[in-house]
Image (cartoon, rainbow, N blue to C red; front, side):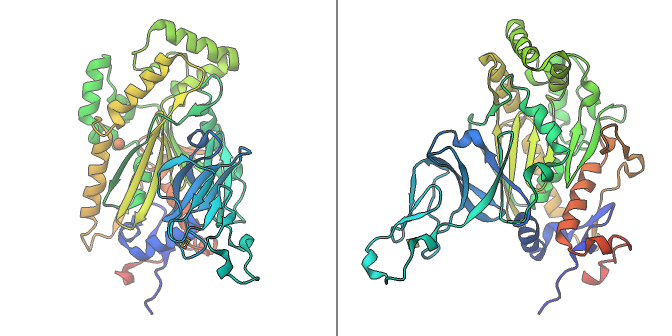
Length: 439
Ligand code: FES
Ligand SMILES: [Fe+2]
């Protein structure tokens, strides 16, 4: 039997070992210790708005189906026939009250109960259909975000989200009705590299001026101002550790007036629409809160382990194997605003994040380069120490640092180590041992 890796030793306070990205044993353990134990983002409730709507999702590598039953309840059913294991739903989304397995025809309701078994005479009297309901995950919904957990003991979703809730609230409150819609389509891409590259990158304020230099230069010319200065040393932006592995690139210092509305609209809506929008926000939330909400219109929020909220989008990071990741990117529209506002949001989103956009493909190229570079042996560690000496406690009690610091990545890996290593509490008291012996 091969010795099990000491996962705790692969992640130190300021650096991580390359094997967390390259080792299949680490990946398998992540699926069990993280994705089977915590809340995993699966979608937004507007994606299953009507009774019978469903969408296939993943909890780590396990296939599942998010459904809306006839009473309005949301379920996450494991996509595995209780007869002999076939997936019972192959579509990405659709509407149906029942799922019929194509293999031998067993049929389930969208709550997961087995209601039909072909040729039942072949089964003895002791056969009880109720014992063959689909496996179900626990469901937690926060402001329309749907999370699933395979751990019956998982803490409440609100507890898990910790300080990330404040920023999720701001994001949802951009709508004068307090709700967003995630039905403008989903853009999917994948890359041959580890899932954590994408999670790190979504809250990496150090890279934009380099990876996205060409996009920023074009934007700067269009807007007549320097976009790149947002990420320089002179920036007043912060990064924050929000607890439980969540983090944000916080634009709070920008929250001074209604002007930041330009961040989402890029100056592309008429004054009339912008005025109506702001009036509706003020009517619902008041002046002060409206400024706070609009100031947050340019967020990069990471919710551990697999959700990023960036700009107007939810980004669902789906691990396939140690060296393959899918990413589903779903832009949102705001309920209760003039159409022009939503159109402007979507066009601005596409310019950077679309498949022909100016930004997101460049990030994927970096994940590919890291994957290739990490094949080099002898250089075993990745450095995440940037800004550790300027970490401080912010007004809201969170740990904060400069926007270009690697605080979000350190926050992610603190939680990673906690979850991967049961004995973390004891281990953290003494310095983690070297993993040189493992190489
Ligand atoms: S595997 Fe589903 S009915 Fe047989
Ligand atoms: Fe990027």
